[in-house]
Image (cartoon, rainbow, N blue to C red; front, side, top):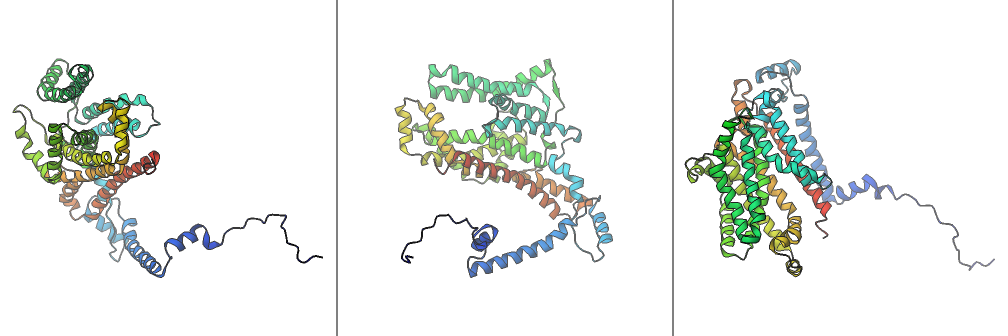
Length: 434
């Protein structure tokens, strides 16, 4: 027997599981929570703090009272259940006033109108947010703003129809007069002519049609709006309108035309240099002085205009950053293909710039939605304003945390949803890779 012969294995060994400490939850805990002595101490301290907070909050939250007609009755029920005077939440204020926190002073028998408007808006925005939705719904996207306005405010149906005609006029000027007048002049006219139409002609035409053919639904004044319905109307309108306006301002700031460039720069810097609360007071007190004498906008419409302008200035800077991040070769490539300015922006430049700008744009939208609470300072009853009105009622005087927790939770749901959609869109477009 030759003891110097090499051993050659003829069969593969069976695969074995890795050690317990190198897989699954044990590995994650070891690497993330107890990777060093300092990390271990911080983990233990953090777990104790979490336990202490939950130990105090959970009984107060879970043991809360849901059925009561006032804070005093909540306390009576609490004392009958907990003999030691244990503090619990009085969630009965939410059960009693949830409709007011959501709809303000909108008539309860007409709640179906804002709900239907929200459903229409969701269906209208779906083809924009998700490419798997049928493009045929883009027709609903164009109609939805006017239908939602009519449902929310009511009145004659001719108002939204006449307002929509202004966009038709702008589109006709841009497409029909563009080849004759040139792209720049046609664009300016497509903006100026509809604005003049809305200021001076839309109102009389709508009134005349309303008198001749009185078709409509019950009119609801803006002072009946409140709660999260008010926040959603202002926030969503500001978001939808500020994005295209911000893109135009960003393009204007990079324009080689002196007047367009300087006007865009002045607008952006002035708007961004003043706090939003100052602009809201301007909308509340001064905006009417800059309008023709026969033109009157209610307070809510003035706030929407100012919030839109404020947000568009920030969106313009975010988009400008995306435009500046593109290499010069992208612009030169568009020129080499023989594309004009608007074609190159639509097909090559803006899709890439907006993809880069997604985090900043969504961050601005989230900030805008949260800033809708500032309207309480000019007399509009947003959720915070309504919480003050509810606490002014003798039945609920002294309730604080329950209302603010409910309002904060609702805001978190909206803002977290926007954040998750942004992250999903970034992964879908592979922003970090191409």
